[in-house]
Length: 90
Image 1 (cartoon, helix red, strand yellow):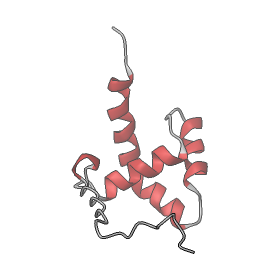
Image 2: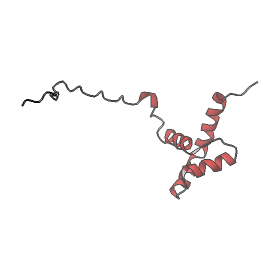
Image 3: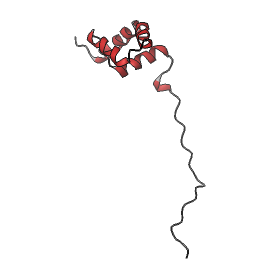
Image 4: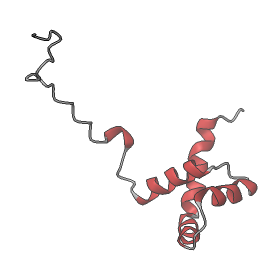
């Protein structure tokens, strides 16, 4: 039986969720996410600063799904823009 990243990723997220309150308390005391991620990595939980921050945001706001974000507004076309003239009248 082989283990893939798809198998491990949910477990890693569950482990971080289990210690999320302790991580948040350490951040309030001034520990940066990168330092906390390094501590987790030393204990065998593969994590880096941005990944840890992402997981903590997902825990705090579980209803925010990146696939369901509000789409960006399309830029308005400037149809009444005046084109500069290249010919100079003498």
